[in-house]
Length: 197
Image (cartoon, rainbow, N blue to C red; front, side):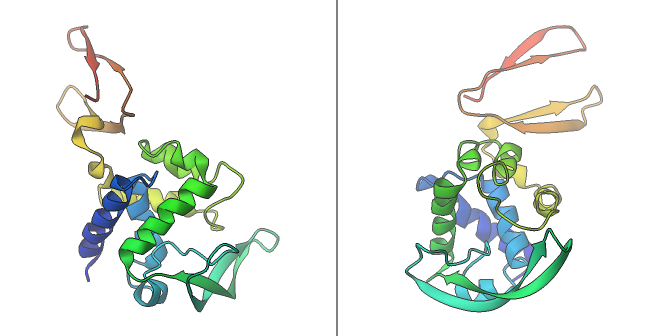
């Protein structure tokens, strides 16, 4: 499976989970799956359909797979290897559904910002729990979002594209469903309201 193939499959799984009610950001979910599973090539992904590095936790009653992992130690300021118990899923769909349930249960700051990729990613670290121990995790996820143009996964009727006077795209912003955005057109001074509907 190529990286592009993985992105397509992960996108479908994430969109399906979101349509079923998972409070997730599709671009960030896909980027996390790519990072955590090495684009589906990790042993955990291949043997357990676990694309997010989700450990068993006290509430887990399903199948388990034990594998080594690298964790970050704040005190040592270094990574170390340990054996962990991981959730094992029947298929990718169940893995993505469980990820959505985990976000809903433990990461409300992310869940409440599912329509804003950057705020969703920040929300994975701005609460009682942090999604990963790697201090560079956010930057790694965002780098995948940019490299694979994952913001394009946001429905086009809720994406504001901003262009400069030459017609080059300068930025894109995902809009919440209830947002109104005021854009001031500098060329002629007119105000244009852009709504996500």
